[in-house]
Length: 282
Image (cartoon, rainbow, N blue to C red; front, side, top):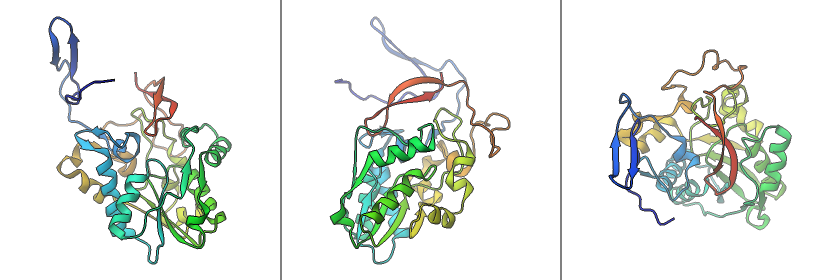
């Protein structure tokens, strides 16, 4: 739109743009410490964005590098991203491990996010419509799949099966963030904890569930290390369970329905450019 980035709006700040006075700023509310959503750098933000003063692309690339140093499978033949948000991390993983990078999973841009679909049947069908494999790249190969995160495990399980059907000899799954063990109560449409695969299962159990030869996640301290001295200013409750604002009473029960503060529906565009209907706080 021809706009020029100046700076981010600070927490609690009110910016007024007026034809007569130009741009003015004030803080009408008591100052609070910032707790920025770390998942913006994991998945939500577009890769070319600068969010909270950091390059999203370089954050994800660095996550992939650290993941390779911790959890690179022996004798891997090829590194494959789950498009599109897994691409920067897969490039970092390939560079750090010296395992060749290939885009062997092709994504349809006409299917939206799968983890927010209302039923398991719709989520399963969406994955099949959304992704396809390049058989010649994976046949008889030990492949390493890089994805940004695992929520319910629906997409991961379908991808592993898809790659085995295409002839992959081994399928190793690597996730460029820590296990998601907590719901978000601050406006992101995530399931309750009972539906989060990493809340219900250990890493080994999750690997068996998605039918992978192995599964590993980026450790939380490694992710925090990428954020450096600003790590304390991020909300990582979905990974750590440490909520900066207490969730609604009773909502942390595994069987409790997910609750947030009267969200309103909006039309949005996700990090891959797809229009989706989501919920945010008013």
